[in-house]
Picture 1 (cartoon, rainbow, N blue to C red):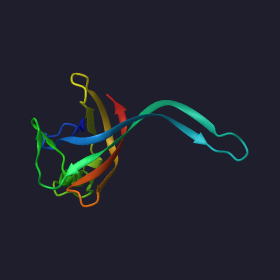
Picture 2 (picture 1 turned 45 degrees about the vertical axis):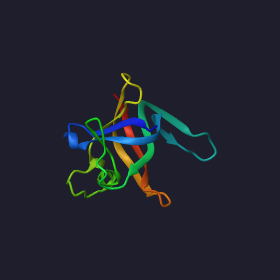
Picture 3 (picture 1 turned 180 degrees about the vertical axis):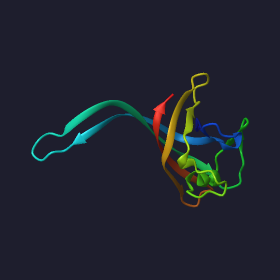
Length: 143
């Protein structure tokens, strides 16, 4: 059963609110620091006291035009993911330029929201199956 992951553009209309059919959802907490590698000595790490979060989501998407719903939320299919990845989308709204919210709603009543920006989105067709796989990476903060 896919994880209940929702992606939405902050302050956007409901048409920009999708459920992802995610198989994996990884959260990495990273110390944002400066590192200097000097020859012959151990690297110098300067702690700036800043933390960031990197998200990685992998899953599947149906072919274009399936328009399936999970309650009132559309399940992202291939064309929805392509719009998210397109630097010049037909909608005129670039997801990569927007702050988005990714919510893990897998456990009922225990939602976790992350405010992020998409850093990478890969879509691939696997074999002769009637679905696509995707890998989305984002960086940001936990709300």
